[in-house]
Amino acid sequence: MDSASQDINLNSPNKGLGSDSLSEMPAERGASGVTPVTLPPGLTEEEAEELRLELTKVEEEIQTLRQVLLAKERHASELKRKLGLSPLSELKQNISKGWQDVQTSNAYLSASATLDDIAHSEVYKKTQETLSQAGQKTSAAFSTVGSAITRKLGDMRNSPTFKSFEDKVGNIKSKVVGGRTNGDGVPPPTDSNPVQDKAPF
Image (tube, rainbow, N blue to C red):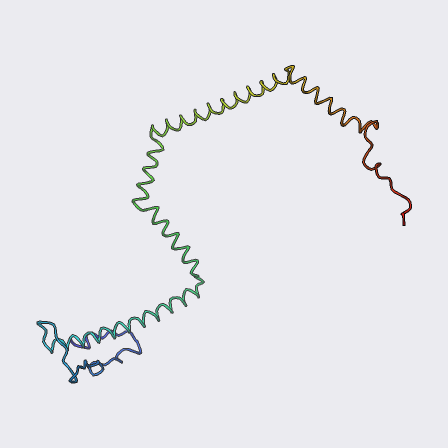
């Protein structure tokens, strides 16, 4: 192949610095000095030499492209910095665009349509009505139970046993609390330790 047709002008300062000869390639050495490289079957020495030269040029071009790509990435990040585009704002834009893509995707639209179909189906409506009725019945049952408990407590309060118990508690309370308030029972705790005017020492 012609080397001029393979040159890619990328305005790189390193383009063309590589060598076109195999003088830089290490020679394999054996016990007796330089040994020839074994060639794959069906490949002549001239073809192998031509492939080696082409490989060297392709590797040089890859290195040049890496350097150009690195320079372009630096230039792009400098432009983004001047425009005020931070990595966070780019991430937000990417997420927003990704969500828009998801919303317009066939899978999302299909799932959304399926959910709409379910929400408008008869089975869904019947289930919703059943749950609503069950909630109303449960609420009514709790109300009934609450009324029954209130009624039972009222009945119990009016029973002779409860009245007798209440009277006994009231009598005990009046004896304990009443004595202190009337002054005829136990004296207040502050009177039990009178303050002495003079210290013993």
